[in-house]
Length: 72
Image (tube, rainbow, N blue to C red; front, side, top):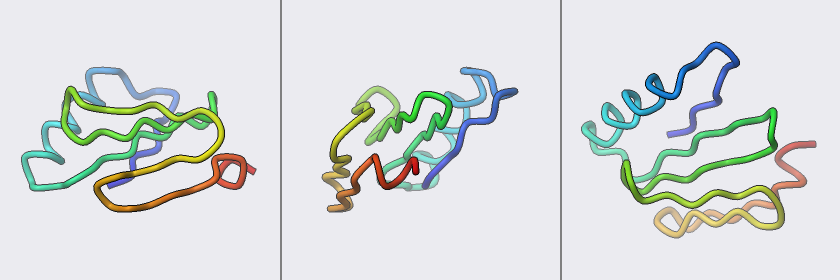
């Protein structure tokens, strides 16, 4: 699941969505904050990694991406 944060979205909206996604069986959720060129990869509501440069790695899905390419 990938969610791109909109300027009008609240932090509570993101938390609520994580509950829905993981409750539905999603393995990982990527929260993209394009303003900061940042991606948070959540493996659970309280287990996440933040990527802002270099290579992004989603260990559960075995996905690797170069963040410079993502935010071109």
